[in-house]
Length: 78
Image (cartoon, rainbow, N blue to C red):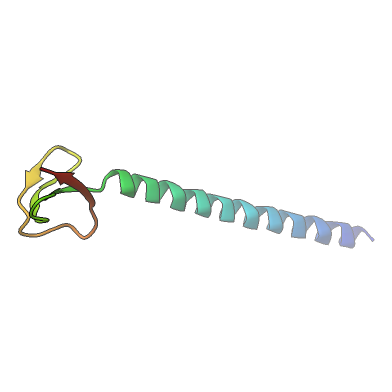
């Protein structure tokens, strides 16, 4: 009788660990995706010519459009 109570308690502990780990994994992924989106560079595109004018990174540096980043936000300019 005593052993059944401990086995039940062990399964609750394992469920708690599993649920806690899953919770941390989900929130870790959400935080990673938010930080990645906030750090995404902006590509300034011309409304009239539809061509890239420059790339602006979040630290304030700018580059030309020779090599575009893999992911970026488009900002339309004149």
